[in-house]
Length: 150
Image 1 (cartoon, rainbow, N blue to C red):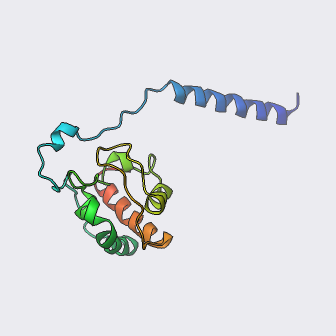
Image 2: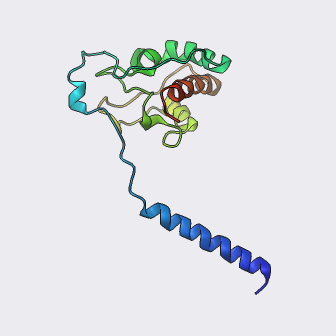
Image 3: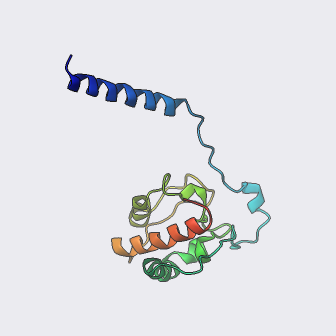
């Protein structure tokens, strides 16, 4: 067997080993506020407290303006969510490894069927371009990082 064959075989075995190791890891438990604890909040009240960064990047500042116009009505000020209306986006559920930037694009374009929270389906959001949504994502991601969500 030549060296290239050994290298390719080694890479395949290593990849298979990594895949098996990841499969054997316990599933990450999604952490949501206890739905019964939401009952203690007034309708429309913020679901979480959001720590704000000292300063937003220029892209996040543009995104904040767009968020306030198109998203805050449901997702609340600073994406803290609103009880009975929409979930907080500053939550581990929406961290980049679980909801990519493209997931936000698709949610705005197509809407989202309810699957993580008891708020019902999210309708598509009219009047936002891909660039608008990317700025909004910059804003949300910067808020997430400030609140320990990476």
